[in-house]
Image 1: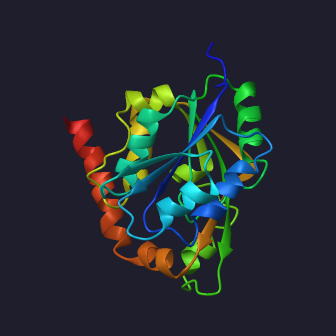
Image 2: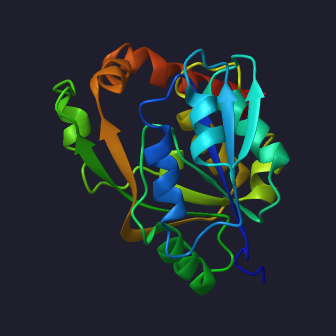
Length: 226
């Protein structure tokens, strides 16, 4: 029987996230079960994101690359990671302090799992758009949200990481491929991600949602037919 992972690498992709990146990293460093390494992948930012990481978080591994979007940045981080488990946090989100501890404790009880995830909490800022779908997701379990999970690095690599050609729905596509792969996925009844609603992501979340999801689902059907 497989053992639960003993080490965690955290990967934080950032693109023009100077307003949020330090808060995100502080929430990672405040974990009651801290990770073994934190990797920030600056994905072609033109603001002070990289400078903030260098000056305020010199203990963090910083990788810079040309703009390739979030999926490509996550793939880059995973290739450089050394932990047995990978954790991902978007630059504008946060983690509850017990997040890693809760996930690893559940994993020890079910060492056959390849992915463990929890629920999300929604934190709406004053400038957040009124997207009722996201607000109503508070306390929900959404298995494709990478920020809420831990995944074995070996599983991530076996799947070839994320489809970096996808601008959107890359997380949904990856979750569907996980299911096709037959990965054992375990959920826990604790919040493991604080999703921050603000003006920018509120707009992104509401544009062309049906088309985006249909694209990922169509790709899954085509894989089954191949």
